[in-house]
Length: 433
Ligand SMILES: Nc1ncnc2c1ncn2[C@@H]1O[C@H](COP(=O)(O)OP(=O)(O)OP(=O)(O)O)[C@@H](O)[C@H]1O
Image (cartoon, rainbow, N blue to C red; front, side, top):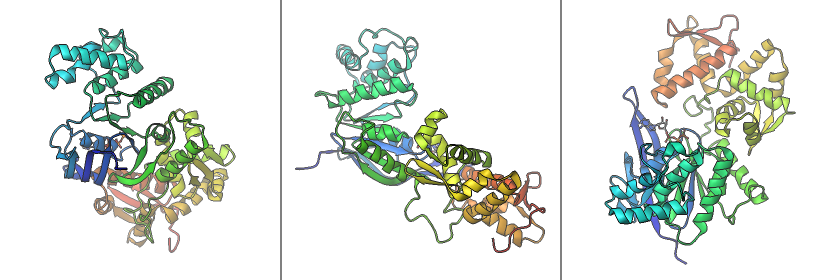
């Protein structure tokens, strides 16, 4: 059996933006992929991994810095004619009725008015907006507005429907409802699009919708793994095969990337997660309070946060050896247990020890200070070094995190006025680090 036709194909696509300081920020790195007729592909990754940039590149809304995008074999330069986009924030024209919003794209493509009207009515009907043709967006609930977003994209009958976190601005029930309806339509004959590519940072949503999940890694965004979801539709979130896949993808998102662990991790090879001491210690305490074990999605739901929001704290606690992450489960380690149970001075000592051992930038600063003549070093020295591996913003974030951690651990202090990192004289460094 021959494979379904390739609709859109990306070859060695990289994308860089020019940052605020004029420096180059690489957001996508060497991405190659094919999107084929008949499939739903989810692009899954953490915040900032470049998912939206990748989707906009597929749509031709932005051009790649390197590499090519092809639609049915023809190179795309400008808007990709085979795609239409559904946005997270609906992006409707508030001064136009539902009908006019849906017709807008057809007008831009030169479809005559009578045919426009006919096609818009069909799309409105398909997506369950019948009776709301003359309503204005402000009269509609979020769920209904996003239905307009879907109708406006589907009316164009794109080969490939692109969706950028289309359900994440909706409440949980509305989102679930719309997802289920969309999947119902997808399985019907006559659904006006051949393939769907959806951006999400929600693992369950990816497994619920997609035939293939492409997991993006960060810094810069790259394809980290591809997971095939061979489950029959409609899918049951509670089925063992479903939860097993979710667990596997959690491992891919939270685990270390193969090949990135150097013999002695360096500050650029092992960046510090963007987490304050207070934040990561709070997470360790919460896991401690739950008997040393917690399920990450359940914890996020309980705290009314997204899993994505908790990941930097999880990463930081795992880097420092306070938690171990297996799939979606967090387990307290003996070091985490002692850290939480100890008094403040003891906690600081444990933190200092773990940070020196496991947080490369903290270790680097600590060692450099120990070797300095007067126990003070210019922060710009480290900024310049970090710029070899990070953008300006990211190197500043790395230093801010290291300083926060080092201050708490009483390893060093920061004199912002002088722009110098200084040794915390009350606690001389341990010999050998
Ligand atoms: N036009 C732009 N100019 C400069 N930087 C940009 C631009 N667009 C995106 N970026 C940067 O590219 C990186 C990736 O952004 P992108 O929105 O693609 O990620 P994402 O994975 O979709 O994140 P999120 O889930 O938070 O939406 C970010 O660091 C972002 O600040």
